[in-house]
Amino acid sequence: MIVSQSLSPRAVRLFKSASPGYTLIEMLVVLTIISLILGLVGPRVLSYLGESRIKTARLQIESFSSALDLFYVDVGRYPVDSEGLTALVERPTGVEIWNGPYVKGGRIPLDPWGHPYQYHLAGDHIPPYVITSLGPDGRGGGMNTASATTNAQR
Image (cartoon, rainbow, N blue to C red; front, side, top):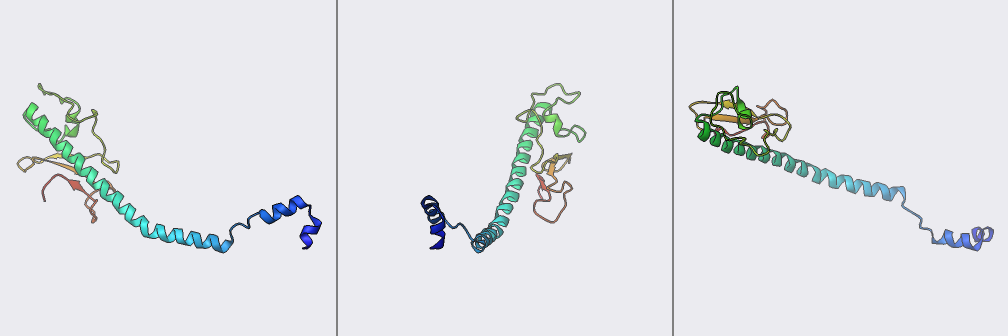
């Protein structure tokens, strides 16, 4: 062995004990396997995330409905459109009996996509109000299931 004759005995030991490392082919195979796994698992994880946001919006809307019913018991009416959901955390003008805030935390949270909830007093419908989350695009009315979540029966 020519290399061992020109190197010191200590260098020869280091050279023989050093691992050769990974080849480019091995690295490419590992990256390909990882990308295939992410390609198969990624969409499923993202769909679970979308479903959980829809469920969160529905739970928040149900919470608002309970708070609106408590408001109705105290005040004798539901908030008008101009008062909106803010009436659950701030006393509306002209209201004598108000035992709020009716929402935990003292503020109206945004929907899971960062948009404010829409409130409309529907009058003679059941329930007499409509609370809507406009979904991820903030416009509602889209074709996917997350386009709009509401408490109104369809």
